Image 1 (cartoon, helix red, strand yellow):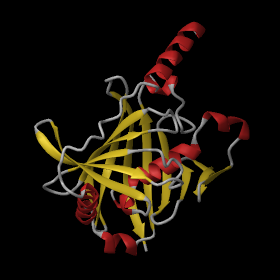
Image 2: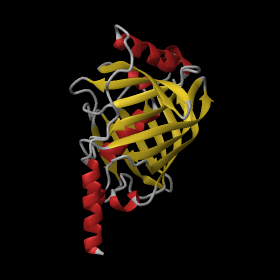
Image 3: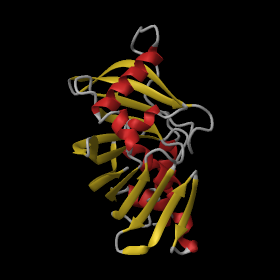
Image 4: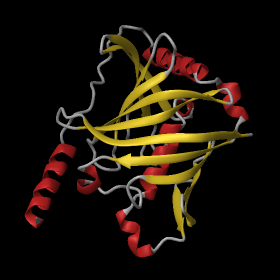
Length: 259
């Protein structure tokens, strides 16, 4: 069994180092692809509720559950303390700040603020097996898209139309200036429905796990919450060497914005 685990781990490392990122070659001849990329993202922000409504709120509280699929529960360390994590999330919309309180464990809280994470009520010896420094900023950012794409330091480049399952989507490549966020080297290939303007899915590099690790997030089951359109399911896939493996599913309920 020990040799099998080592072999499986080696396969994961090889796949992580496989260059499977989407193409960055633009499929458009627009003279200013960056202006068009910003226009599409701004259009999406309006479709999701608009800047005025978004800036009026300061915090989002939501009940969250995340399930990781096999074999990633074994081959890759789950960033949560256990699978099927169930927690109450508090996200500050305009700050790098969040709090996580686990259901049934009221004394166990993760606090994220300005790039630093503190863990309250948790045994220190267990911390190396979890990734609060990764999973809290990740969940914070993905939940608050497409609004966070308008943060300063983000470059929005329109790549053109991308066909998927007989439908064309507007694709925008999002990159970041140095020292923006905790992983400024990450890239996002965001797809927007041109008819409704919504963010529907995105591919992204995951430099926290490997320089060339790539995942995909699909936004599903949109709900309007106090005038803001939010996805109530985020379905994640791990993409490597042509694979498209189910990775994790995050579900949101009881969302509430506060001014």
